[in-house]
Image (cartoon, rainbow over the protein chains, first blue to last red):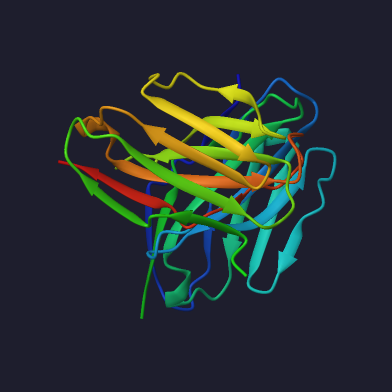
Length: 115
Length: 114
């Protein structure tokens, strides 16, 4: 069965600090997909990134970067020079390749960025 | 031009009532989903429909009945509401049902059962 663990329940940083949100996953499939979503205080779920299991290249998008390491089953998310607007709950999620598989979410990490 | 929309955004009702939540997507996707987010923010799949057919039905009480009149709509009807049904319900859609397809979420419906 697939499982996603986000061990950090809440992280507090001061603006301009860098912060890394951890995500560890478990799956028996060799092909799977990893996702990060952001849920700001307004409540909607915003898609951030999708990563395929066969593509271990790290990705950078502005201040956001993702480090995918199959050897440690981790897909960590780093925000560089954090801003108050980054305050949100961040969810890591996993879906196996089967059409009947479900998107399994971690419990989320609440990030609080103070000025 | 909202991609996935839900109505209502807020729903406050008494125990025992029946209520419906509507979802529409204008992305041309084939697959739609309902998720429940509890008070601890945990997100869990409830149902998934592909081309109007039910493909995923997690262990949800049969008081919950989804209906998909067409590919663009997936509604959720809840009978005999209970206090434990209070949660945020999210609708989502994806191009199709395969694992690689990104799911895009609606704004959520905040249900409070008194």
